[in-house]
Length: 604
Image (cartoon, rainbow, N blue to C red; front, side, top):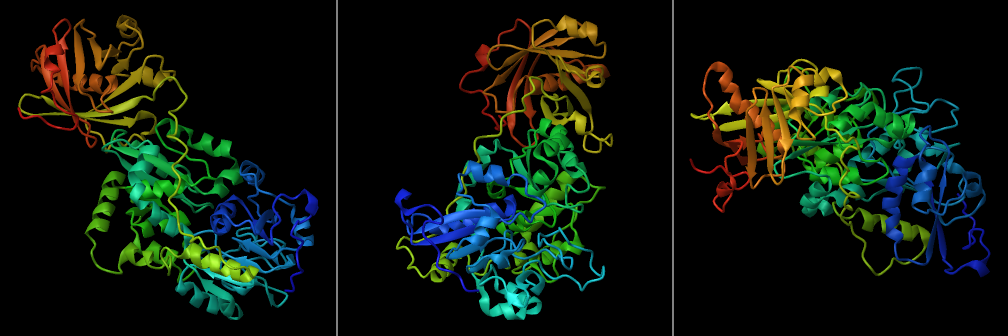
Protein backbone atom coordinates (compact mmCIF):
# COMPACT_ATOMS: atom_id res chain seq x y z
CA UNK A 1 0.00 0.00 0.00
CA UNK A 2 1.12 3.55 -0.76
CA UNK A 3 -0.86 5.83 1.53
CA UNK A 4 -1.36 9.37 0.30
CA UNK A 5 -0.57 12.17 2.71
CA UNK A 6 -3.90 13.05 4.31
CA UNK A 7 -5.30 16.50 4.71
CA UNK A 8 -5.46 17.14 8.47
CA UNK A 9 -8.90 18.69 7.99
CA UNK A 10 -10.35 15.51 6.39
CA UNK A 11 -12.59 17.69 4.27
CA UNK A 12 -13.33 20.54 6.67
CA UNK A 13 -11.81 23.90 5.62
CA UNK A 14 -8.91 24.77 7.90
CA UNK A 15 -10.36 28.15 8.87
CA UNK A 16 -13.28 26.41 10.57
CA UNK A 17 -11.18 24.19 12.80
CA UNK A 18 -10.58 24.82 16.49
CA UNK A 19 -7.91 22.12 16.85
CA UNK A 20 -5.63 21.33 13.91
CA UNK A 21 -4.47 17.72 14.32
CA UNK A 22 -1.27 16.39 12.80
CA UNK A 23 -2.62 12.93 12.01
CA UNK A 24 -5.99 11.38 11.19
CA UNK A 25 -7.10 7.89 12.19
CA UNK A 26 -10.05 5.97 10.75
CA UNK A 27 -11.94 3.61 13.01
CA UNK A 28 -13.62 0.91 10.91
CA UNK A 29 -16.91 -0.44 12.25
CA UNK A 30 -18.44 -3.69 11.01
CA UNK A 31 -21.21 -4.14 13.55
CA UNK A 32 -21.94 -3.12 17.11
CA UNK A 33 -19.86 -6.03 18.44
CA UNK A 34 -16.75 -4.82 16.65
CA UNK A 35 -17.55 -1.19 17.50
CA UNK A 36 -17.41 -1.76 21.25
CA UNK A 37 -13.92 -3.31 21.03
CA UNK A 38 -12.84 -0.59 18.61
CA UNK A 39 -13.64 2.11 21.17
CA UNK A 40 -11.68 0.18 23.79
CA UNK A 41 -8.63 0.27 21.52
CA UNK A 42 -9.02 3.90 20.48
CA UNK A 43 -8.71 4.93 24.12
CA UNK A 44 -4.93 4.93 23.48
CA UNK A 45 -5.39 8.34 21.79
CA UNK A 46 -7.17 9.98 24.71
CA UNK A 47 -5.82 13.42 25.57
CA UNK A 48 -3.71 13.76 22.40
CA UNK A 49 -4.82 16.78 20.34
CA UNK A 50 -2.41 15.76 17.58
CA UNK A 51 -4.75 12.93 16.53
CA UNK A 52 -8.24 13.29 15.02
CA UNK A 53 -10.31 10.10 14.73
CA UNK A 54 -13.12 9.51 12.25
CA UNK A 55 -15.38 6.49 11.92
CA UNK A 56 -16.88 4.60 9.05
CA UNK A 57 -18.76 1.35 8.43
CA UNK A 58 -17.95 -1.25 5.80
CA UNK A 59 -21.66 -1.99 5.24
CA UNK A 60 -20.66 -5.64 4.94
CA UNK A 61 -22.28 -7.14 8.00
CA UNK A 62 -25.74 -8.73 8.01
CA UNK A 63 -25.95 -7.43 11.59
CA UNK A 64 -25.80 -3.74 10.70
CA UNK A 65 -28.75 -2.80 12.89
CA UNK A 66 -27.96 -0.48 15.74
CA UNK A 67 -24.82 1.04 14.20
CA UNK A 68 -26.44 4.40 13.45
CA UNK A 69 -27.84 4.60 16.97
CA UNK A 70 -24.51 3.51 18.46
CA UNK A 71 -22.62 6.23 16.62
CA UNK A 72 -25.22 8.93 17.29
CA UNK A 73 -25.42 8.18 21.00
CA UNK A 74 -21.64 8.46 21.35
CA UNK A 75 -21.37 11.43 18.97
CA UNK A 76 -18.83 9.68 16.76
CA UNK A 77 -17.62 11.76 13.77
CA UNK A 78 -18.92 9.40 11.09
CA UNK A 79 -18.34 9.36 7.31
CA UNK A 80 -19.84 6.96 4.72
CA UNK A 81 -17.71 4.10 3.44
CA UNK A 82 -17.48 5.50 -0.09
CA UNK A 83 -16.12 8.73 1.34
CA UNK A 84 -13.66 6.79 3.52
CA UNK A 85 -12.34 5.05 0.38
CA UNK A 86 -11.86 8.39 -1.39
CA UNK A 87 -10.16 10.20 1.48
CA UNK A 88 -6.65 9.78 2.82
CA UNK A 89 -5.83 8.87 6.41
CA UNK A 90 -2.66 8.11 8.30
CA UNK A 91 -4.01 4.93 9.86
CA UNK A 92 -7.10 2.72 9.91
CA UNK A 93 -7.94 0.38 12.77
CA UNK A 94 -10.36 -2.47 12.20
CA UNK A 95 -11.63 -5.04 14.70
CA UNK A 96 -12.94 -7.45 12.09
CA UNK A 97 -11.91 -8.74 8.67
CA UNK A 98 -15.16 -8.02 6.82
CA UNK A 99 -15.68 -5.63 3.94
CA UNK A 100 -13.33 -4.15 1.37
CA UNK A 101 -10.53 -3.14 3.68
CA UNK A 102 -8.09 -3.44 0.78
CA UNK A 103 -9.62 -0.30 -0.76
CA UNK A 104 -8.40 1.94 2.06
CA UNK A 105 -5.36 3.96 1.04
CA UNK A 106 -3.58 3.88 4.38
CA UNK A 107 -1.96 1.38 6.74
CA UNK A 108 -4.54 -0.91 8.33
CA UNK A 109 -4.13 -2.46 11.78
CA UNK A 110 -6.34 -5.52 12.19
CA UNK A 111 -7.40 -6.63 15.66
CA UNK A 112 -9.81 -9.26 16.96
CA UNK A 113 -13.10 -8.11 18.48
CA UNK A 114 -13.38 -11.01 20.92
CA UNK A 115 -11.18 -13.26 23.01
CA UNK A 116 -8.61 -13.94 20.33
CA UNK A 117 -9.29 -15.97 17.19
CA UNK A 118 -11.59 -18.88 18.00
CA UNK A 119 -14.16 -19.06 15.20
CA UNK A 120 -13.77 -21.38 12.21
CA UNK A 121 -15.31 -19.80 9.14
CA UNK A 122 -14.94 -19.89 5.38
CA UNK A 123 -15.90 -17.36 2.73
CA UNK A 124 -17.79 -18.36 -0.39
CA UNK A 125 -15.65 -17.81 -3.51
CA UNK A 126 -16.46 -14.43 -4.98
CA UNK A 127 -18.66 -13.37 -2.09
CA UNK A 128 -18.67 -9.63 -1.64
CA UNK A 129 -18.73 -9.84 2.13
CA UNK A 130 -16.12 -11.21 4.44
CA UNK A 131 -18.44 -10.89 7.40
CA UNK A 132 -18.31 -14.09 9.47
CA UNK A 133 -21.33 -16.15 8.73
CA UNK A 134 -22.27 -14.26 5.57
CA UNK A 135 -20.68 -16.89 3.39
CA UNK A 136 -19.75 -19.55 5.88
CA UNK A 137 -20.21 -23.15 4.90
CA UNK A 138 -20.07 -26.43 6.68
CA UNK A 139 -16.64 -28.07 6.79
CA UNK A 140 -16.12 -30.19 3.70
CA UNK A 141 -18.91 -28.54 1.69
CA UNK A 142 -16.80 -28.15 -1.43
CA UNK A 143 -13.93 -26.09 0.01
CA UNK A 144 -10.96 -26.80 2.18
CA UNK A 145 -11.51 -26.96 5.89
CA UNK A 146 -11.79 -23.37 7.13
CA UNK A 147 -9.22 -22.15 9.62
CA UNK A 148 -9.59 -19.58 12.36
CA UNK A 149 -11.40 -16.48 11.17
CA UNK A 150 -8.78 -13.74 10.92
CA UNK A 151 -5.74 -16.01 10.78
CA UNK A 152 -5.98 -17.43 7.24
CA UNK A 153 -5.11 -16.12 3.80
CA UNK A 154 -8.73 -15.94 2.65
CA UNK A 155 -9.31 -13.21 5.23
CA UNK A 156 -5.92 -11.51 5.10
CA UNK A 157 -4.94 -11.49 1.41
CA UNK A 158 -6.53 -9.78 -1.61
CA UNK A 159 -5.19 -10.35 -5.13
CA UNK A 160 -1.98 -11.73 -3.70
CA UNK A 161 -1.29 -8.77 -1.40
CA UNK A 162 -1.60 -8.71 2.37
CA UNK A 163 -4.44 -6.40 3.42
CA UNK A 164 -3.44 -5.36 6.95
CA UNK A 165 -0.13 -3.63 7.62
CA UNK A 166 -0.17 -5.05 11.14
CA UNK A 167 -2.03 -8.01 12.62
CA UNK A 168 -2.74 -7.75 16.33
CA UNK A 169 -2.59 -10.97 18.35
CA UNK A 170 -3.36 -11.42 22.02
CA UNK A 171 -1.22 -14.52 22.66
CA UNK A 172 1.88 -16.14 21.19
CA UNK A 173 -0.05 -19.33 20.40
CA UNK A 174 -2.01 -17.37 17.76
CA UNK A 175 1.19 -16.66 15.88
CA UNK A 176 1.72 -20.38 15.36
CA UNK A 177 -1.79 -20.75 14.00
CA UNK A 178 -1.20 -17.70 11.79
CA UNK A 179 1.93 -19.43 10.48
CA UNK A 180 -0.22 -22.35 9.39
CA UNK A 181 -3.00 -20.24 7.89
CA UNK A 182 -1.06 -17.38 6.28
CA UNK A 183 2.72 -17.69 6.70
CA UNK A 184 3.44 -14.50 4.74
CA UNK A 185 1.58 -12.52 7.42
CA UNK A 186 3.74 -13.67 10.35
CA UNK A 187 6.36 -10.87 9.95
CA UNK A 188 3.51 -8.34 10.28
CA UNK A 189 2.04 -9.84 13.44
CA UNK A 190 2.27 -8.14 16.85
CA UNK A 191 1.42 -9.87 20.12
CA UNK A 192 0.07 -7.14 22.40
CA UNK A 193 -2.18 -8.99 24.87
CA UNK A 194 -5.91 -8.68 25.50
CA UNK A 195 -7.33 -5.28 26.59
CA UNK A 196 -10.59 -6.78 27.81
CA UNK A 197 -8.86 -9.30 30.05
CA UNK A 198 -6.71 -6.49 31.43
CA UNK A 199 -9.77 -4.41 32.19
CA UNK A 200 -11.47 -7.28 33.97
CA UNK A 201 -8.46 -7.73 36.25
CA UNK A 202 -8.30 -3.99 36.89
CA UNK A 203 -11.97 -4.18 37.92
CA UNK A 204 -11.59 -7.13 40.30
CA UNK A 205 -11.23 -5.00 43.47
CA UNK A 206 -14.65 -3.48 42.81
CA UNK A 207 -16.63 -6.70 42.73
CA UNK A 208 -18.95 -5.61 45.54
CA UNK A 209 -19.78 -2.35 43.75
CA UNK A 210 -20.74 -4.23 40.57
CA UNK A 211 -22.88 -6.65 42.54
CA UNK A 212 -24.72 -3.81 44.22
CA UNK A 213 -25.28 -2.05 40.88
CA UNK A 214 -26.73 -5.26 39.45
CA UNK A 215 -29.14 -5.58 42.36
CA UNK A 216 -27.45 -8.56 44.04
CA UNK A 217 -28.45 -8.60 47.69
CA UNK A 218 -26.70 -9.99 50.74
CA UNK A 219 -26.56 -13.78 50.62
CA UNK A 220 -27.48 -14.04 46.94
CA UNK A 221 -25.41 -15.74 44.27
CA UNK A 222 -25.14 -14.16 40.84
CA UNK A 223 -25.16 -16.49 37.85
CA UNK A 224 -24.16 -15.16 34.43
CA UNK A 225 -25.86 -16.72 31.40
CA UNK A 226 -23.83 -16.09 28.24
CA UNK A 227 -25.04 -16.68 24.70
CA UNK A 228 -23.24 -16.05 21.46
CA UNK A 229 -25.19 -15.93 18.18
CA UNK A 230 -26.20 -18.74 15.84
CA UNK A 231 -28.41 -21.79 15.90
CA UNK A 232 -26.10 -23.81 18.14
CA UNK A 233 -25.66 -21.13 20.79
CA UNK A 234 -27.20 -21.22 24.26
CA UNK A 235 -30.23 -19.30 23.00
CA UNK A 236 -30.18 -20.98 19.58
CA UNK A 237 -32.06 -23.94 21.00
CA UNK A 238 -34.68 -21.69 22.58
CA UNK A 239 -34.92 -20.18 26.06
CA UNK A 240 -35.20 -23.56 27.81
CA UNK A 241 -31.92 -23.25 29.72
CA UNK A 242 -32.71 -19.70 30.85
CA UNK A 243 -36.20 -20.72 31.96
CA UNK A 244 -34.87 -23.75 33.77
CA UNK A 245 -32.22 -21.74 35.61
CA UNK A 246 -34.84 -19.35 36.97
CA UNK A 247 -37.42 -22.07 37.62
CA UNK A 248 -35.10 -24.18 39.76
CA UNK A 249 -33.48 -21.37 41.73
CA UNK A 250 -35.07 -19.77 44.82
CA UNK A 251 -35.47 -16.07 44.16
CA UNK A 252 -33.99 -15.04 47.50
CA UNK A 253 -30.85 -17.09 46.87
CA UNK A 254 -30.07 -16.36 43.22
CA UNK A 255 -29.89 -13.51 40.75
CA UNK A 256 -29.46 -14.12 37.02
CA UNK A 257 -28.12 -11.86 34.29
CA UNK A 258 -28.17 -12.81 30.60
CA UNK A 259 -25.39 -11.41 28.42
CA UNK A 260 -26.63 -11.96 24.87
CA UNK A 261 -24.44 -11.31 21.82
CA UNK A 262 -25.29 -8.09 19.94
CA UNK A 263 -25.83 -10.11 16.75
CA UNK A 264 -28.83 -11.72 18.43
CA UNK A 265 -30.23 -8.34 19.47
CA UNK A 266 -29.77 -6.77 16.04
CA UNK A 267 -30.40 -9.91 14.00
CA UNK A 268 -33.86 -10.42 15.47
CA UNK A 269 -34.54 -6.99 16.94
CA UNK A 270 -34.35 -5.90 20.55
CA UNK A 271 -38.13 -5.90 20.92
CA UNK A 272 -38.29 -9.48 19.70
CA UNK A 273 -35.56 -10.72 22.02
CA UNK A 274 -37.21 -9.05 25.01
CA UNK A 275 -40.54 -10.51 23.96
CA UNK A 276 -39.10 -14.03 23.81
CA UNK A 277 -37.49 -13.64 27.22
CA UNK A 278 -40.31 -11.64 28.83
CA UNK A 279 -41.51 -14.53 31.07
CA UNK A 280 -37.95 -14.80 32.40
CA UNK A 281 -37.61 -11.03 32.86
CA UNK A 282 -40.85 -11.03 34.86
CA UNK A 283 -39.32 -13.73 37.02
CA UNK A 284 -36.27 -11.54 37.75
CA UNK A 285 -33.83 -12.06 34.85
CA UNK A 286 -31.56 -9.08 34.15
CA UNK A 287 -31.20 -8.45 30.42
CA UNK A 288 -28.76 -5.54 29.90
CA UNK A 289 -28.66 -3.78 26.51
CA UNK A 290 -25.98 -5.08 24.12
CA UNK A 291 -23.93 -1.95 23.44
CA UNK A 292 -22.72 -1.47 27.01
CA UNK A 293 -20.04 -2.90 29.27
CA UNK A 294 -22.61 -4.44 31.61
CA UNK A 295 -21.38 -7.91 30.62
CA UNK A 296 -17.90 -7.06 31.89
CA UNK A 297 -19.35 -5.89 35.21
CA UNK A 298 -21.37 -9.11 35.35
CA UNK A 299 -18.24 -11.25 34.88
CA UNK A 300 -16.56 -9.38 37.73
CA UNK A 301 -19.63 -9.83 39.93
CA UNK A 302 -20.59 -13.41 39.05
CA UNK A 303 -20.35 -16.45 41.31
CA UNK A 304 -20.84 -18.86 38.41
CA UNK A 305 -21.78 -18.93 34.73
CA UNK A 306 -23.63 -21.07 32.23
CA UNK A 307 -22.39 -20.46 28.70
CA UNK A 308 -21.55 -21.71 25.23
CA UNK A 309 -18.74 -21.27 22.68
CA UNK A 310 -18.80 -17.45 22.71
CA UNK A 311 -16.02 -15.12 23.82
CA UNK A 312 -17.84 -14.16 27.02
CA UNK A 313 -17.64 -17.76 28.18
CA UNK A 314 -13.90 -17.78 27.59
CA UNK A 315 -13.43 -14.46 29.39
CA UNK A 316 -15.50 -15.63 32.36
CA UNK A 317 -13.58 -18.89 32.68
CA UNK A 318 -10.23 -17.13 32.27
CA UNK A 319 -11.23 -14.63 34.96
CA UNK A 320 -11.73 -17.55 37.34
CA UNK A 321 -15.51 -17.82 37.39
CA UNK A 322 -16.63 -21.48 37.66
CA UNK A 323 -19.16 -22.62 35.12
CA UNK A 324 -20.92 -25.06 32.85
CA UNK A 325 -21.58 -25.32 29.13
CA UNK A 326 -25.21 -25.47 28.04
CA UNK A 327 -24.27 -25.51 24.34
CA UNK A 328 -21.06 -25.82 22.36
CA UNK A 329 -20.80 -25.81 18.56
CA UNK A 330 -17.64 -27.78 17.87
CA UNK A 331 -18.05 -27.26 14.12
CA UNK A 332 -17.61 -23.49 14.40
CA UNK A 333 -14.70 -23.59 16.87
CA UNK A 334 -11.19 -23.35 15.38
CA UNK A 335 -8.98 -26.37 15.89
CA UNK A 336 -6.25 -25.85 18.47
CA UNK A 337 -7.82 -22.64 19.77
CA UNK A 338 -8.29 -21.84 23.46
CA UNK A 339 -12.03 -22.17 22.93
CA UNK A 340 -11.62 -25.76 21.73
CA UNK A 341 -9.61 -26.53 24.86
CA UNK A 342 -12.21 -24.86 27.06
CA UNK A 343 -14.91 -27.00 25.48
CA UNK A 344 -12.96 -30.08 26.50
CA UNK A 345 -12.37 -28.81 30.03
CA UNK A 346 -15.82 -27.61 31.13
CA UNK A 347 -18.68 -29.95 32.10
CA UNK A 348 -21.92 -29.92 30.12
CA UNK A 349 -25.29 -29.12 31.68
CA UNK A 350 -27.19 -32.31 32.41
CA UNK A 351 -30.93 -32.34 31.85
CA UNK A 352 -31.46 -35.07 34.43
CA UNK A 353 -29.90 -33.36 37.43
CA UNK A 354 -30.59 -30.22 39.40
CA UNK A 355 -28.93 -27.22 37.82
CA UNK A 356 -28.24 -25.76 41.27
CA UNK A 357 -26.44 -28.97 42.21
CA UNK A 358 -24.37 -28.87 39.02
CA UNK A 359 -23.40 -25.24 39.61
CA UNK A 360 -22.42 -26.06 43.19
CA UNK A 361 -20.20 -28.87 41.89
CA UNK A 362 -18.61 -26.52 39.37
CA UNK A 363 -17.80 -24.06 42.15
CA UNK A 364 -16.38 -26.83 44.33
CA UNK A 365 -14.37 -28.23 41.44
CA UNK A 366 -12.93 -24.83 40.60
CA UNK A 367 -12.16 -24.03 44.24
CA UNK A 368 -10.63 -27.39 45.04
CA UNK A 369 -8.52 -27.91 41.91
CA UNK A 370 -5.02 -26.81 42.92
CA UNK A 371 -3.25 -28.51 40.02
CA UNK A 372 -1.37 -25.97 37.95
CA UNK A 373 -2.19 -25.78 34.26
CA UNK A 374 -5.26 -28.03 34.34
CA UNK A 375 -8.85 -27.61 33.22
CA UNK A 376 -10.20 -24.12 32.68
CA UNK A 377 -7.19 -22.75 34.54
CA UNK A 378 -4.94 -23.86 31.73
CA UNK A 379 -7.09 -22.02 29.21
CA UNK A 380 -6.78 -18.80 31.21
CA UNK A 381 -3.09 -18.69 30.37
CA UNK A 382 -3.89 -18.69 26.65
CA UNK A 383 -5.97 -15.50 26.61
CA UNK A 384 -3.10 -13.04 26.90
CA UNK A 385 0.68 -13.25 26.75
CA UNK A 386 1.16 -9.84 28.37
CA UNK A 387 -1.24 -9.36 31.29
CA UNK A 388 -1.88 -5.69 31.98
CA UNK A 389 0.12 -4.48 28.98
CA UNK A 390 -2.28 -4.62 26.02
CA UNK A 391 -3.09 -0.91 25.74
CA UNK A 392 0.52 0.15 26.23
CA UNK A 393 1.73 -2.25 23.56
CA UNK A 394 -1.08 -1.33 21.17
CA UNK A 395 -0.35 2.38 21.64
CA UNK A 396 3.29 1.78 20.82
CA UNK A 397 2.25 0.06 17.58
CA UNK A 398 -0.18 2.84 16.60
CA UNK A 399 2.16 5.73 17.29
CA UNK A 400 4.99 3.96 15.50
CA UNK A 401 2.77 3.62 12.46
CA UNK A 402 1.71 7.27 12.69
CA UNK A 403 5.27 8.47 13.06
CA UNK A 404 4.49 10.33 16.28
CA UNK A 405 6.11 10.19 19.68
CA UNK A 406 3.94 8.66 22.36
CA UNK A 407 2.37 10.93 24.97
CA UNK A 408 4.27 11.19 28.24
CA UNK A 409 1.29 10.04 30.28
CA UNK A 410 1.17 6.25 30.65
CA UNK A 411 -1.79 4.30 29.37
CA UNK A 412 -3.20 1.49 31.50
CA UNK A 413 -6.43 -0.49 31.90
CA UNK A 414 -9.13 1.27 33.90
CA UNK A 415 -11.95 -0.43 35.82
CA UNK A 416 -15.23 -1.12 34.07
CA UNK A 417 -17.83 1.56 34.70
CA UNK A 418 -20.72 0.69 36.97
CA UNK A 419 -23.85 -0.41 35.11
CA UNK A 420 -26.13 2.58 34.66
CA UNK A 421 -28.20 2.09 37.77
CA UNK A 422 -29.81 -1.06 39.03
CA UNK A 423 -32.22 -2.50 36.47
CA UNK A 424 -35.65 -1.29 37.56
CA UNK A 425 -38.21 -3.74 38.78
CA UNK A 426 -40.62 -4.99 36.17
CA UNK A 427 -43.17 -2.33 35.33
CA UNK A 428 -46.18 -4.47 36.19
CA UNK A 429 -47.95 -3.37 39.40
CA UNK A 430 -48.44 -7.01 40.34
CA UNK A 431 -45.83 -9.59 41.26
CA UNK A 432 -45.53 -12.99 39.65
CA UNK A 433 -47.24 -16.03 41.26
CA UNK A 434 -44.76 -18.00 43.33
CA UNK A 435 -44.46 -21.67 44.11
CA UNK A 436 -43.23 -21.76 47.70
CA UNK A 437 -41.45 -24.76 49.17
CA UNK A 438 -41.41 -24.87 52.97
CA UNK A 439 -39.90 -27.14 55.58
CA UNK A 440 -40.83 -27.00 59.28
CA UNK A 441 -38.16 -28.30 61.63
CA UNK A 442 -37.10 -28.17 65.27
CA UNK A 443 -38.65 -30.03 68.20
CA UNK A 444 -41.34 -27.39 68.57
CA UNK A 445 -41.69 -26.63 64.87
CA UNK A 446 -40.29 -23.13 65.34
CA UNK A 447 -37.88 -23.13 62.38
CA UNK A 448 -39.35 -22.68 58.93
CA UNK A 449 -37.27 -22.78 55.75
CA UNK A 450 -38.90 -20.89 52.87
CA UNK A 451 -37.79 -21.12 49.24
CA UNK A 452 -39.78 -19.32 46.54
CA UNK A 453 -39.77 -20.12 42.81
CA UNK A 454 -41.50 -18.45 39.82
CA UNK A 455 -44.62 -20.56 39.27
CA UNK A 456 -45.03 -19.68 35.59
CA UNK A 457 -41.65 -21.18 34.65
CA UNK A 458 -42.15 -24.57 36.27
CA UNK A 459 -42.29 -27.45 33.80
CA UNK A 460 -44.27 -29.78 36.02
CA UNK A 461 -41.39 -31.97 37.13
CA UNK A 462 -41.35 -30.54 40.66
CA UNK A 463 -38.08 -32.30 41.42
CA UNK A 464 -36.68 -29.26 43.23
CA UNK A 465 -39.69 -28.77 45.54
CA UNK A 466 -41.08 -31.01 48.26
CA UNK A 467 -44.02 -29.41 50.06
CA UNK A 468 -45.09 -26.47 47.94
CA UNK A 469 -47.98 -24.04 48.09
CA UNK A 470 -48.93 -21.31 45.65
CA UNK A 471 -48.88 -17.62 46.52
CA UNK A 472 -50.58 -15.02 44.32
CA UNK A 473 -51.33 -11.33 44.65
CA UNK A 474 -54.79 -9.82 44.65
CA UNK A 475 -55.66 -8.92 41.07
CA UNK A 476 -53.74 -11.83 39.52
CA UNK A 477 -54.96 -11.77 35.89
CA UNK A 478 -54.27 -15.43 35.10
CA UNK A 479 -57.23 -17.43 36.33
CA UNK A 480 -55.15 -20.62 36.33
CA UNK A 481 -53.05 -19.28 39.19
CA UNK A 482 -55.71 -17.30 40.98
CA UNK A 483 -58.01 -20.30 41.08
CA UNK A 484 -55.52 -22.58 42.81
CA UNK A 485 -53.64 -20.15 45.07
CA UNK A 486 -53.33 -21.26 48.69
CA UNK A 487 -52.19 -17.84 49.88
CA UNK A 488 -53.22 -14.42 48.61
CA UNK A 489 -51.44 -11.14 49.27
CA UNK A 490 -54.22 -8.55 49.58
CA UNK A 491 -53.94 -4.89 48.68
CA UNK A 492 -56.73 -3.75 50.99
CA UNK A 493 -58.00 -4.90 54.37
CA UNK A 494 -60.94 -6.84 52.99
CA UNK A 495 -59.90 -10.51 53.03
CA UNK A 496 -63.46 -11.80 53.04
CA UNK A 497 -63.78 -10.82 49.37
CA UNK A 498 -60.90 -13.09 48.40
CA UNK A 499 -62.15 -15.97 50.54
CA UNK A 500 -65.55 -15.69 48.87
CA UNK A 501 -64.18 -15.50 45.34
CA UNK A 502 -61.55 -18.23 45.67
CA UNK A 503 -62.77 -21.28 47.62
CA UNK A 504 -59.30 -22.88 47.55
CA UNK A 505 -57.65 -19.94 49.29
CA UNK A 506 -56.65 -20.77 52.88
CA UNK A 507 -54.73 -17.63 53.92
CA UNK A 508 -54.94 -13.93 53.06
CA UNK A 509 -52.14 -11.61 54.17
CA UNK A 510 -52.74 -7.87 54.50
CA UNK A 511 -49.73 -5.52 54.92
CA UNK A 512 -49.74 -3.38 58.07
CA UNK A 513 -47.57 -0.48 59.17
CA UNK A 514 -43.90 -1.13 59.77
CA UNK A 515 -42.64 -4.69 59.36
CA UNK A 516 -45.97 -6.38 60.11
CA UNK A 517 -48.80 -8.00 58.24
CA UNK A 518 -52.16 -9.46 59.28
CA UNK A 519 -52.58 -13.13 58.37
CA UNK A 520 -56.26 -14.03 57.99
CA UNK A 521 -57.38 -17.68 58.00
CA UNK A 522 -60.53 -18.95 56.36
CA UNK A 523 -61.88 -20.10 59.74
CA UNK A 524 -61.91 -16.51 60.96
CA UNK A 525 -58.74 -16.46 63.04
CA UNK A 526 -56.35 -13.56 62.52
CA UNK A 527 -52.64 -13.50 63.39
CA UNK A 528 -50.22 -10.60 63.37
CA UNK A 529 -46.79 -11.48 61.95
CA UNK A 530 -44.02 -8.99 62.73
CA UNK A 531 -40.43 -9.14 61.59
CA UNK A 532 -37.85 -8.36 64.26
CA UNK A 533 -35.23 -6.27 62.42
CA UNK A 534 -36.15 -7.81 59.10
CA UNK A 535 -33.68 -8.76 56.39
CA UNK A 536 -34.12 -7.40 52.85
CA UNK A 537 -36.06 -10.50 51.81
CA UNK A 538 -38.38 -10.62 54.85
CA UNK A 539 -41.61 -9.09 53.52
CA UNK A 540 -45.31 -9.90 53.84
CA UNK A 541 -45.12 -12.68 51.24
CA UNK A 542 -42.44 -14.62 53.10
CA UNK A 543 -44.23 -14.01 56.41
CA UNK A 544 -47.52 -15.36 55.05
CA UNK A 545 -45.80 -18.49 53.72
CA UNK A 546 -43.98 -19.06 57.00
CA UNK A 547 -47.23 -18.78 58.99
CA UNK A 548 -49.00 -21.03 56.49
CA UNK A 549 -46.29 -23.67 56.97
CA UNK A 550 -46.33 -23.27 60.77
CA UNK A 551 -50.09 -23.82 60.82
CA UNK A 552 -49.89 -26.77 58.44
CA UNK A 553 -49.40 -29.22 61.30
CA UNK A 554 -52.92 -28.46 62.43
CA UNK A 555 -54.08 -30.52 59.49
CA UNK A 556 -52.41 -33.54 61.07
CA UNK A 557 -54.10 -32.93 64.41
CA UNK A 558 -51.16 -31.21 66.08
CA UNK A 559 -52.11 -28.04 67.96
CA UNK A 560 -50.22 -24.92 67.05
CA UNK A 561 -51.45 -22.51 69.72
CA UNK A 562 -51.75 -18.77 69.31
CA UNK A 563 -48.14 -17.65 69.70
CA UNK A 564 -44.85 -18.48 68.00
CA UNK A 565 -41.38 -17.05 67.58
CA UNK A 566 -40.42 -18.46 64.20
CA UNK A 567 -36.89 -18.58 62.88
CA UNK A 568 -37.48 -18.11 59.16
CA UNK A 569 -34.63 -19.41 57.02
CA UNK A 570 -34.49 -18.03 53.47
CA UNK A 571 -32.34 -20.99 52.43
CA UNK A 572 -29.22 -19.02 51.63
CA UNK A 573 -29.80 -15.34 52.27
CA UNK A 574 -29.98 -15.62 56.05
CA UNK A 575 -32.36 -16.20 58.97
CA UNK A 576 -34.76 -13.68 60.51
CA UNK A 577 -37.06 -13.82 63.51
CA UNK A 578 -40.80 -13.62 62.85
CA UNK A 579 -43.09 -12.97 65.84
CA UNK A 580 -46.52 -14.51 65.35
CA UNK A 581 -49.34 -13.50 67.71
CA UNK A 582 -53.06 -13.95 67.71
CA UNK A 583 -54.59 -10.60 66.77
CA UNK A 584 -54.72 -8.23 69.73
CA UNK A 585 -51.67 -9.57 71.57
CA UNK A 586 -48.78 -7.08 71.90
CA UNK A 587 -45.47 -7.66 70.15
CA UNK A 588 -43.73 -4.32 70.73
CA UNK A 589 -42.12 -5.54 73.94
CA UNK A 590 -40.32 -8.23 71.98
CA UNK A 591 -38.68 -5.79 69.56
CA UNK A 592 -36.04 -4.49 71.96
CA UNK A 593 -32.26 -4.57 71.58
CA UNK A 594 -32.13 -8.32 72.21
CA UNK A 595 -34.20 -9.20 69.14
CA UNK A 596 -32.41 -11.35 66.60
CA UNK A 597 -30.27 -9.68 63.99
CA UNK A 598 -30.94 -10.68 60.36
CA UNK A 599 -29.11 -13.85 59.48
CA UNK A 600 -28.28 -14.69 63.12
CA UNK A 601 -29.93 -17.62 64.87
CA UNK A 602 -30.43 -16.76 68.56
CA UNK A 603 -29.87 -19.43 71.15
CA UNK A 604 -33.06 -21.04 72.35
